[in-house]
Image (cartoon, rainbow, N blue to C red; front, side, top):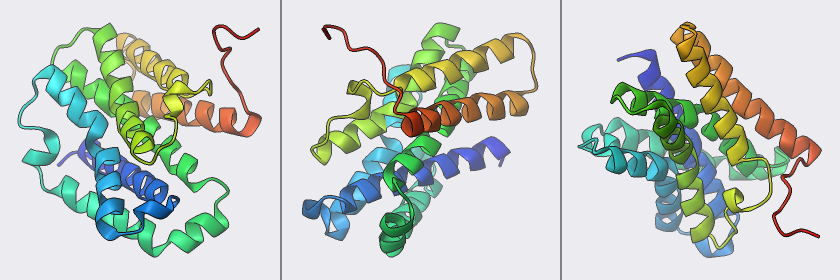
Length: 205
């Protein structure tokens, strides 16, 4: 087992927490199955879509049961600590979502590159890995997906992914390159939340 594998599991758990917290914030999703279902789709939606597009079979969570275990743990953490999450963290959903997209963008990009996908396609697949689970989550809880808002969201993922590809071309150590690229996504997103950065909307007067 490599460090990348454990990082992937951590990212999966973080997204599961994000999905479960989103479900808990909606009164309609207060049963265990509904909360777990949203957490599961949030955690694996992007990676599953990526693997299907690349023809990478079996799908990662079908091949390795540890992903299911980590998702269950993430959902459990969200449920048990729900009062603390909502009482102590200003925006718990955005916090865990931000951590998740930073990790998953680069992990998805790495997996695409390992299968000899060209750099541009790998960047798009990395961004898809990070964002599609969140799109499913927001759609199922009847929220407008963040990617369709004018917030700096997908742009942060794209910036980090391009930075990783550049670092790879410059032969930067893979671990250092990962940390710099994933951190850049997280920092850009956190700064955007803090300072309310938005992109111009086409058609605005």
